[in-house]
Length: 161
Length: 161
Image (cartoon, rainbow over all chains, first blue to last red; front, side, top):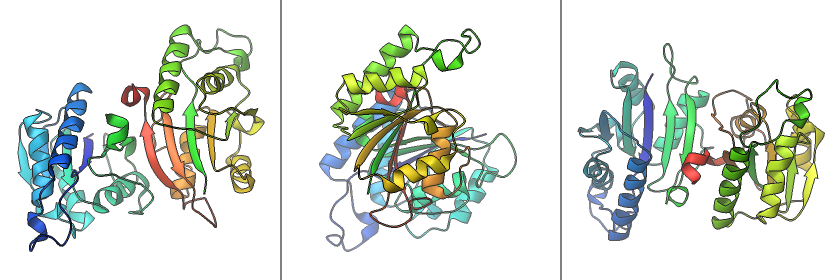
């Protein structure tokens, strides 16, 4: 059983204004709101063994805010959390990890698709995830995780702050 | 398009302590927490055209708290929200209503099953809904609502308060 907190990166600079989209940073407003979300998660006693993040700057900065807020004390980047990743790599990671809790920081529609896949077995677009929003999922104690996990939170920053 | 807020009744008296389960009331604690949830929803500018509720006392009392908090100013009871209802009746109501927003107060696992059905097309048990918890769903602008609606909130009281 693993508790998974999917966290979408906060508000970032305008797409197209950066030569390399991988280097698009959080805006000051995005940083501030993400920090408040992280503090709320801390208040909710969210504590994870590892913070796994897309290496893109806006995600990495979001993950670093979770780290600084002590949601977790270990940060790892994972190429398969990049915007064009395939869910299978995340599935493999989740299936093999010994971590009982993880925060996964990345992009849309990847994260909500992953949530739909884990929960309902299909990576559909029926879950709405806002920037700096959080999805909580619990995988089953044993066996297949796809289509058998439980969704317990879906919250935009507005609900958390 | 209809905005649907599914609201599970608050903490109620012990099952079995009441000769008629339909008359099992909210506890004082359940009333207080439900009131705080309703006030938070009001703060989030949740406003619905109709509050539809199971006629069971614990649901009706929850709906009356939403009414008193001015989440909506019209309350209707619906037998098909009773614990043993079939989803088809709710589906029919949702398909024919002209209301653009509705709060639906009822029981588990009915509500989370309905959420899964609307969102993913299968009434599975993969969504966890706590007492006095709220699920937000938006039906599509036109066409079939089952399997095509969008989940935008899933929040236990803990997230809302």
